[in-house]
Image 1 (cartoon, each protein chain N blue to C red):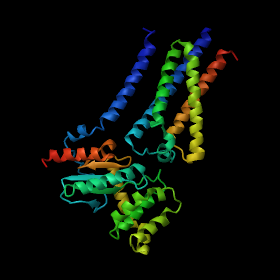
Image 2: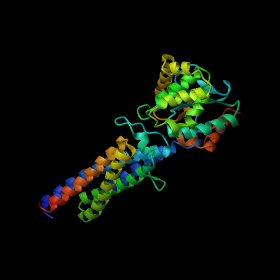
Image 3: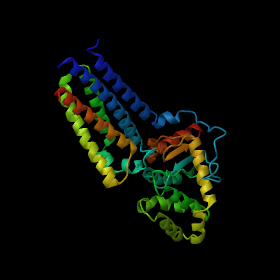
Image 4: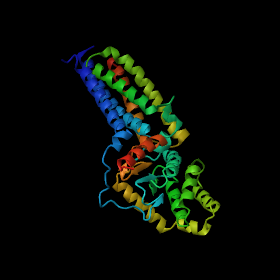
Length: 146
Length: 225
């Protein structure tokens, strides 16, 4: 890998690590609120209770937010390692980010058309996941020299 | 050193996450709460609507003050737990209900709070309170919740016209606002929030009857009862 490509990879994956850290905090907050059983108050949108209290917020008895927190932590770890030169992990990270983007799109669909309510914390998570997706794609394009 | 730096960063984040989870979870154990001295609410804290809606002896050594929202599902789950506690600790526990409708996320919550307060004006607060929780699924998403509340009032033997007038009246609204002011002063930001002798209990301590019982028992023991 050329020096320029290496530098761009370092910058992009450092950004990815920061983005995933924000996602981790968001998911962690929702996990804790879910486990404590409180109704989360929305300050921007108005559907937190409907979305987070729905059956879509739980996956096999586990809060979906907890699964999200694990995914974000995994992405944070991989992005950090890649930023420090372990570029062989890129494909693994790309698979996880692709799964997260797909899940986020599905949950956006559920909020818009099934529950007809939006939870701001879930929207933030979707934005962060899709941002990670864009970072991975941009890095791939740059490394191919397109 | 640089070789290990990413692992150090990852471990630091993992440790921070563990600390956050530990602090959030650790603060909710009943024993840690019951061993603390009972805190007094600061002198200037608003009293809330007077007189409050209360069950049980005014001289009871334990006062459970609930801030609830009739449309909140966890509040509905707490309802039978508190009813059982009232029955089992007769004379020793007084239960106060305060309005904290989260109307920005529950479309019918404020109207339900108004209905309960209007019922109180005909001495049927607790009957309406029970009805609202027990029939929450029926009205929570109903576009005509107000009409349903009027039906409930009629089925509870209330004067329909007075109920409808009171529901829209200023007296009812002022009571809800007064409870809300107390809630904000106490830092309540979600429902249900329950205070035991002015000390906020964690949700883990109230959602299961046995947990709440052990908190109450410990508080009674602390008072030598």
